[in-house]
Amino acid sequence: MQSTIFIALLVFIDQLTKLLVKFNLSIYQKVDILGSFLRFTYVENQGIAFGIDTSRFHIFVIFLTVLAIIALLYYKKNLSLEYEKIPLILIIGGAIGNAIDRILVLVPSFNYFGVIDFIDIGFGYYRWFIFNLADTFITIGVILYFILQYKFNKEYNATSRNI
Image 1 (tube, rainbow, N blue to C red):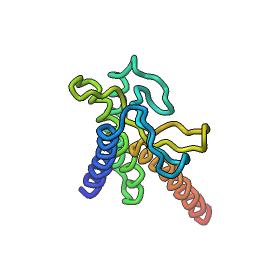
Image 2: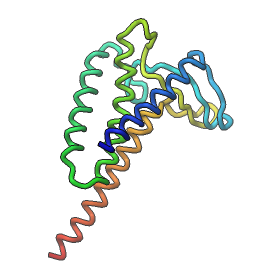
Image 3: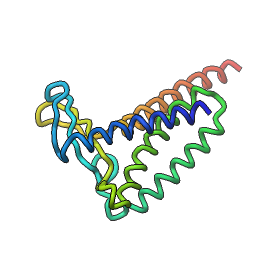
């Protein structure tokens, strides 16, 4: 139950920030937050990670996203240790947040053209790809998952050598 609330909170925060950007900035408008290092630049990404264009396969991407969310929820449900669920909660929350944007593209009256991205970091002309909080949740979740798996495997290997 707690993980469901946390996932819902992540989705809410992601969607709230996207709506604030959508209704307060014009498309491609830039607002400096920390000089040129951190700025908000409003774009709507029709593709997937790193701007890879998948607009011709929009329905297929939505289907795969929903399928991945269901698989992750099932996997999370079967984990025994609570700390193992944290990375999956972050990944699921982020995936749902971006899936909502992809689904809203299918509703013309909502005027969505892709996933709303706005976090723009870099130095001068050297910029990273523009992303959103859902992308951040997914990235942190994946990194945390690999760290925990590495730590678990290291401890398991050390324990099994002593037996």
